[in-house]
Length: 256
Image (cartoon, rainbow, N blue to C red; front, side, top):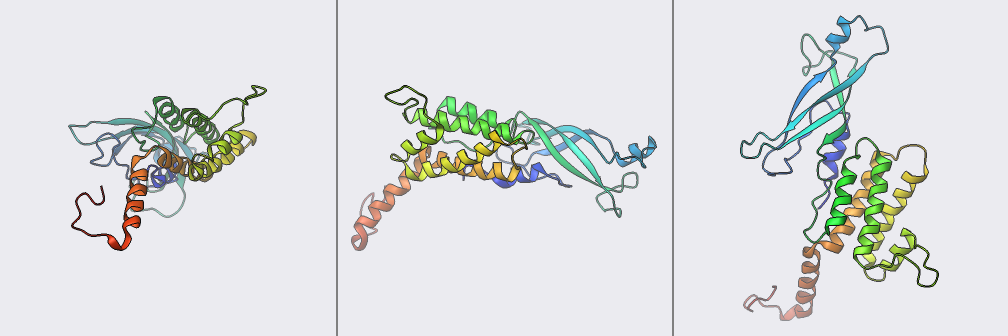
C-alpha cells in the first residue's frame, strides 16, 4: 500500500493524544511531539476571559525523531480547543480539561505516499507539493493531484491536443484514451478526477474524507502503472496458472 490513509486521518484531528507517526526518514521509530506554545485553560483564566467565547487557540511545536543517528524534524502548527467537562486524567491540576488538537501545517510536508522508483521527477514534484496543503486547503490539494494526473498521462504519452483542431484535450478525455492502455488504472484516475472537480467548482472546501478517498484512488493508479511488483505478480500468476497440474517444486527457477 503506497498511501497510509489512517495517519492523515488521525493528524487531521481532533485528537487528545498525538498519533503515532513513523519517522519517514529512518522508518525505525515514531516521531515524538514537542509542543512549544499554546494557550492553556490556566492562561485563559488568568486573563479573566472564562466567560467569553474564547475556547480555542493555536499551537506550534516540533515532531522529532528520537534516534540520534537520524534526528529528523518537522515543524507542526495548528489549533486547539478545550473540551469543557469533568477533569481528565490527561489533564493537570493547573489545566484539568482535555485539549483537542487539529493540525493545519507540517513543514516540511510529510510524504503523501511511498512512490515507486519509476515515478518520473516531474510527477514526483507535483505529488510532493500536494502534501503541503493537505490539512489547510483540501481543494488546493485536490487540484494539485488533478495536475499530477495530467502529468502522468503526458509521461505515458497520452496526447494533450486533438489531432485535427489542435485544441487541448480535457483530463476526462485523456483518461478515456489511456483506458485503452490500462483500464484498471484509468478507472482509479477517473474517480480522483471527479472528486477533484468538486474541489474546483464548489465554494465550500472539499470534505477531508473525500480528499483522502480521491488520494486512495490516485495512489492505486500509481501502483498499477509504476510499481514493478504488480507486473511481477501478474507474470508469475500467469506462469503458475499455465503450468497448472504440471507444477512441480523440483523445477529450476520455476517461479522466477
